[in-house]
Amino acid sequence: MPGAENAGCRGYREFRSRELRMPGVDDIGKRGPGIDCRVAGNAEVLRLQEKTKQSYLSSQMSPCVIWDMIGKYLDLQDVKNLGLVCKKYRESSKLMLSKKSWIKLKLSAGSSFSTTMEKFCREIYPLLIPKYIYPIAFFLPTTAAHVQAAVRCGVAAKIRLIPNSGGHAYDSISTGNNSTLIVDFHEMQKVEVIGTGKYAIAQLQPGALLGPATAQLWKLAKVGIPVGNCLTVGLGGHAIGGGIGLFSFVYGLLIDNVLEYEMVDAKGNIVYTSETENPDLFWALRGVGGGYIGIITRFRIRTFQADMIRLSLVRMVYPVKDFVKVVSATQDWMAWTRDNEPLVGTMALAFNDNWNVSDSVTPGGSEPGIIVASFHIYDPDRNPTSNATFLRKISEMFPPGGKKIVMFPPYLAMHYATGYAPVVLPPSMPAPDAPGSLQQAGEGGFVFPPDDYIVNLFMKFTKQMAIVRYFKARSQFVKRKLTMEELERLGEIMLRIPNNRAGLLINTEHGAIQKVAADKTAYVHRKVGANFRIHVTGTTRDGNIPEAVEWMEEFWAAMKSFDGGETYQNFPDLDVKDYLKRYYGSNLDKLVSTKKRWDPTNYFVNQQSLPLKIIKK
View 1: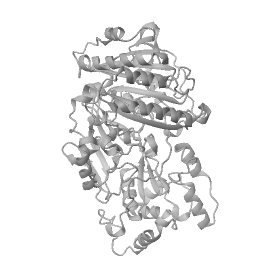
View 2: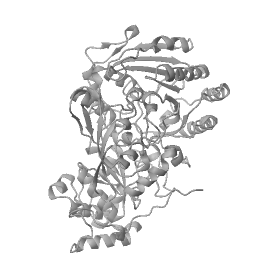
View 3: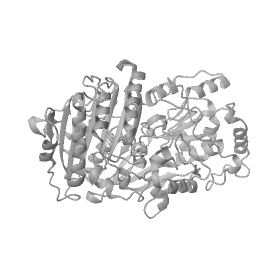
């Protein structure tokens, strides 16, 4: 089932929302020992800067200038490792120039070139070429020092940087445009564990994907972190925007468990931030999402003992014609669990009854009808008195006629059963061998593959495997119960939901999420009831995409009457005009103040980044 942190490939929209002021050469001060672009005597760098200042933005100068400059700030071994060989006009396995840049270099050098970049672009950013997005280059750092160099030289060369971890950012927030440079964390996916037992801390790099990270943490120390259930989402965005998932009700959002961020700021300095070190920045990074204050290069996150918890999962499936009574019951159920069993999470999804497209290599993909999944997590350290009375109550509160399965999955099996992995395993990388033995864990002999099989499968996931498709979503938080009139209006539209191209997600927001005050972190959405998200996804093979978008907009219009005025910042929507208010609410002014302190020239910019000043209307 596509869950709280699920996205597909996004369409590209040009940046129009605010002026792209680039800090000029005179704005750039010292950047630390030995890395001052204006250091006396370095005439070549000065000439490069001046040439950049005069002609880069008119696209008359080779984009290799930035890499020549980066090469001057990295030691020779780093240059060798990164393959920064622009001066010789040769391709590199670590530095990939875009097709547009290759053409410019080819014309100026009179040399022949391979199709390395186009292959890279199609494999890792498959929608960029058909959408005519050709960023200046893709920079694949392997250390935080490489990111430092990219920032310092990006500022000097007046080139914007866009970080990309998993590539799941809605509406192409993480794919930039033709004048930006992508800092791709494909080579920074390390997962480590410091300490043991209940005191273990996970240390992860931003390129780590949720599925592989979950598998590695289990393999290393039998621990977990509370992540979402889209297994190919990258940690880099997930752990600064919120990080909602199945385990949030017991352990809180992922941001509530971050202990320390390592960040490269707008001066190219590495900054460490925690409750006691740079606390203003730590506050902001826990919820800033795409607000973009700096580039995160490492996370330290509190873990839980995954081998100690016990899980219960109830799954019910109904036909679309039952939408009104099922969603009505789901609302009542969410209210009951909030007041009586807040450690129970619930997710409801709706698709056409005839859905027949496989969009996940795990069971949590899209499927026919209305699916309601409710789960209880028992952790003796966190909720020793919880008695999971929901197993009895849920049968009383939902209507008859649906197909119900009760499961008691082990930890990894829970991720497998509910996980969404929209990938295609290439022939050169087949799925793991069929499990030789299955774990029985539910009524009716329901079984799961063994842990080794799940670990092996999850470890194979990479963002290159993403299914190439269209994706667009609209979402809002809801703070009250829908009226019967509102439900019936939605139900009438739901009867016409396009097959294989559209879906609805509703998930609860309570338990440990609501125990944190709205001003404790930048994440302000602590008192909402549920998150409603309607989306369109698919390829032209799946049907008429524009028709599906029209249907989504009709459903979205019907949702307006119960709009709670807030939107999850990890579900960005470029069509939302008041996005700053909806993402950050009463925390906006403090966030803008923090942005101004740490990025005073507004170098870090994307389509919905924080401004340096709020213009009051």
